Length: 41
Image (tube, rainbow, N blue to C red; front, side, top):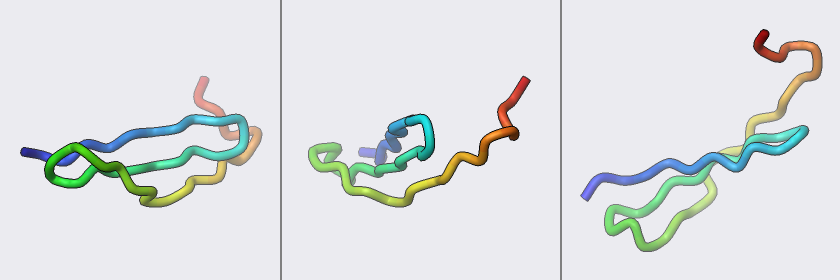
């Protein structure tokens, strides 16, 4: 099976998690910090 990526979008940060190859368990991968004023328009 392929792995999945999940995004947890918040006001100040976006959390990224990836699943294991069985898609049973997801683990944190990284956190992206949102900079105000750089929103897409």
